[in-house]
Length: 587
Image 1 (tube, rainbow, N blue to C red):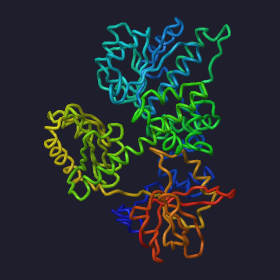
Image 2 (image 1 turned 90 degrees about the vertical axis):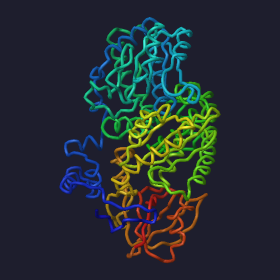
Image 3 (image 1 turned 120 degrees about the horizontal axis):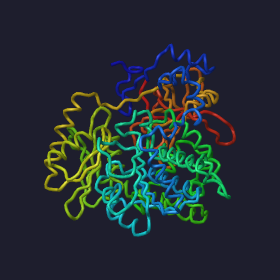
Image 4 (image 1 turned 180 degrees about the vertical axis):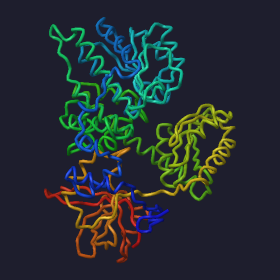
């Protein structure tokens, strides 16, 4: 294997690799779109086909939105909802407690309000009820007078609860995007692009995207039936795209095709601050600029999620569906407080976990075990351990009944989900499932040692067959003089960046450092200077206590190859370019 600049182990322990691309395609894209050769290369490395290039840069929903009726089950679901709306029945929206679930629930509630329907939202308690529909919740909704239930971001495999719902006379429509089985639950309809009888073209949609398309289908049917007469105004569904953007980014689905259009158009709607809940969340988070995908994923999303993790599960959906500005401000402040609590709890559990596993030999898995650790943060802690040790990592929190609730995260090339399912099938787990990169499970304490041995044996076999060293993939080496505001603005057209469309990363080689110091709590900033004297501002966030940060601070006049992302810096009224340092290697 060849490494960029022969860096097989950087200061952060990563190998540097060029992102592969078709040179002829890159050149043709550059010429046809009148963009720089570097931007052409970045697009080619993201598999942008020549015929799709213009649509990629300027995606429109008009070009990319499918007809709702192309989805299996759509017609039956639309008929069911139209009947409930026209009969003035009470409709319940049963959502998941994460951001995709909250945005899906809020979007559908806002749509139903706009067409004059009665609705209520039910979000299960993460710790008491767990994920997805349950029979007691169905009973409670029936007692409230609900006739129709729409599950969003859940329900595809909720066989027993939905059979119970049908038995007690509830009409249930499932709107979901999770993996489906051959068998579907006994309900009115299941709309899911991952149904095995779908063609898979829209399998990358988040639940909120599927919910939006469902709303389009209902709206069209209501229009055709003459519903929007006698003073009833047809809603502008584009105003719901801010929620589609938030849920799509936070569910880490690939930002390509329709998802990309959803996010680009949705961020424009978000900037207009038409949703009081989102506006309050933007304010409490201190966002003073036009919202970007970064803000959705790393600033707003964690606050919406915090209610489900350490607070009250329903708060996110309530915030995003309210039109009461005062209530929105109060809930946003609550969620901001819960997010701070979540960070503190997460840090405490992470510190305990690191203290426990540091110095141990790990063959196939890093396993941290605690008593009473908050179940709402163990998944995040597992992610942090995976990043720290570059190995599959599992975190288990035992309760007072000796039942351990576990969450795991894996590294590329090692399938954790299959291993967890095999452990469950072997009788080592009470529950367990997941996919290649993430899994959840429950284990009895008496089975813990056997489960640990099973994990290590299975995962170490996979690791031996793979090169699991972390890699840093970049889009080439550039000169400091090339890092101009014009280049950054051009590259931003390739955004929004996220899953499936990674932010461009570049190497600046043989750079000297000047004025390296600490700014804020733990950020390291400096100036980079090339052999021609060209200077570039740079910063490494949260790097003070890392090998990278210490190398920058104590550079001793050495020269470095510096890896990172380019960003416009408008501090002080001017416009310049700053490098966000990801990694470095000695030159």
